[in-house]
Length: 205
Image (cartoon, rainbow, N blue to C red; front, top):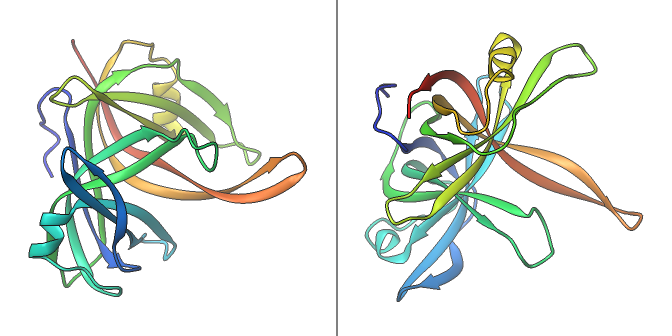
């Protein structure tokens, strides 16, 4: 995928395996949506499990079954979970196209947007630099998706000098990460989703 994208770009291409059958998610403007987990292997052999959201008419033309190898093309979307359970910011892969796939797993994102929170540069216990970013990517119809991103090493140090309102264009991957949340003495394992940044360049607004 070419890094030369338009402003406020949001393009995702993932290739992996459907880990379960699609189930009903919600209905909006008369269209029903279903969701299913897509398992995507990393080069290390570990697995990212991404929630795919697909309009039912798209699934009618391409039925998905558990264990099916798929290529999913679409956008990374976010919405606020107000139920009080699980993560407050829910990240999904909105499918615009589904195709059978036979080959290596793939996980590619191209995003362009604006930083909406100050970057947080920190160091892991093992001494590696890491920077947390929050990227706002506008949709066509006035809404925006807020996408947590992380960068490592020298790229993290560069990202640490960015400011709120700076425009950036990045290439990365959508990954899942398990963590333990302790609430009123009760531990619960949850899954966080974030964009792991591979390349980043500033863009003028």
